[in-house]
Length: 328
Image 1 (cartoon, rainbow, N blue to C red):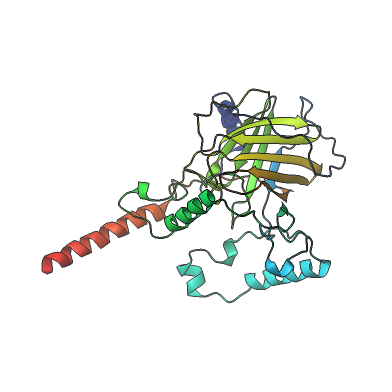
Image 2 (cartoon, helix red, strand yellow):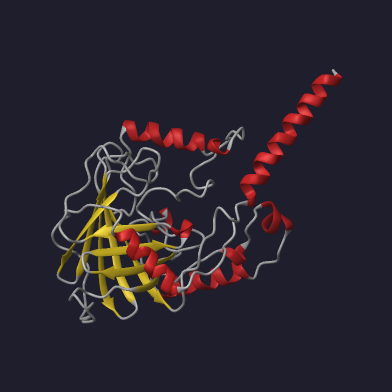
């Protein structure tokens, strides 16, 4: 998939404001944020902390703690420096056909981000690992692994939602190889998170309205926000069983906390509660770093040559098999 044309800022803001009033979403949440907020006084016209702008959430810090750092929450300065040198060496490696053609994307496309001193994004449990899966969660994870292997190509509906440009998948959003940018918009009573990946927007009411009925399920769930001092707390429920995070169930509850700690940093942390999947809740944290520039249109459908080529190739295989059968 390729990126397409840039939208003008005016058109983008207009479109999002229109979306605000044709969509609904939900919130309750937990009380205190654990983010250590420093003084940041910028406010929107309606008096809320100003989070607006384009933010990048890429980082080479893994979600789970590698075994070599077992028992250690943080890296030393020397280890952080060594990781930076390793990343630079990887970017300079000699090109080869397997990486540049066979794997479609080489190191040029990978967005590494800035390393943090943390050994894992997960801060609870203290071992930096995802909690064990429940028996039900293990079954879903196994089914997901199976679905990620050989897929059919009789129709585009055989392909994943991501391949079909419908959604990257469920929440929470953690860093991927590329497109780790999000633009935040605020108007009275709403916050919008516009993700670069697949150009998805989360429209989050902050006016106290209740969640949607539990019968209403959405790709990215139903989000409700509230302000706790300097922190935006967002609770999301009403997920669908067609999107998930590592096999999570549709009844997962996600609580996110955004705290702007200085001009260029938002402390972002989230807690996943899903008793049908994980044996206990877990929490992770990563920084959002302010960047200059724009979020460009993803143009996934317009540039989705891979889907057309995949289906065309399968039709060619079917024809070749039919022709061979006739000769027999």
